[in-house]
Length: 161
Length: 259
Image (cartoon, rainbow over all chains, first blue to last red; front, side, top):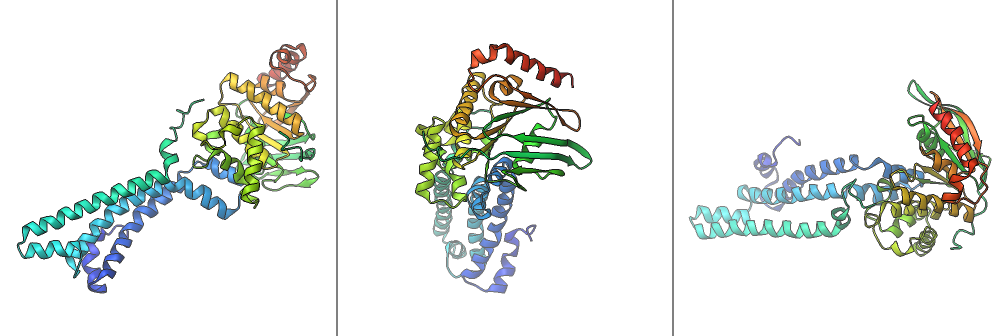
């Protein structure tokens, strides 16, 4: 499933689910699951095994260990996956609105283009760009806040002693 | 400073006929050890002999191939609540997303202790290692020596009666090392805990410990058990120039190098 470019199944999904917000939401979820899931797996795998041994030695219960050690340890990677997913979701939103929607930015751009209202089409395009920019700027701030410890942790070997 | 006065004397720990193999290669063979309550026991041996494997077996992190480990007369399988582990790599064992205080208090959360109580206890243990001022800092804001103090405080807060230390000062500079050696000795004297110290540094082993276990051979066995005749008061300069210190060091050195 992962090998299919999400944009390629847009027409099929719209035929199957009809015009409206459902196919759009489905497509975005479908496309966003992969970068987040794969990055999460990577993050968990890449954890310092000593932290997990520490949890074992101090007999940290399973749930607490997962929440406070595994999840937090993988969080930088999870966030990286979410950042990719955010960009992908915007692309898919516009594409699915091009093909089958009766409202939305993509629909607006296509409609204006077909009416040869180029100024409006450009306006929609620029608005999409602005939306993407704002979303990623907001996400970056959120990421900096949630991972403040990560951005300030010195590289291994560079720590002051 | 009286945070730990509630700790009763440490339970004795017995190791009987402990063997450990990975696949076909046997690392440890027939290890017998008695850890007396309130002693510092050092484990030394040439590098790669299996010191860390022995410590991991004692801590319950890895299973035994044969033999048994018991604490206070009870056979243990897996990590025991009496044991506090201090790793060599403090960077990998303190969590960078938790403040110092949270790191120390975290194992207590695992015990289900209420927040106010575990923070109070963690703060006391940080004071025990001279770090109460760093409670609100993150580990990466601290020096290596301070991070290792945090690890020690965490083991104390966990109410460990037996401290297992795997090369705890191995990646610290010489001065910090000496300060921490003296800190561990002082904590042992004050709290009555037992300390099992794995180290490759023979001087450190003899300086800190009451007895030194020498491992050698392949598979590793206990080749000697040296009683360190230096009393319970240790001082970096006086102790290390004591003729009995030199004698004990030479004996251990010969056993390791000539192995």
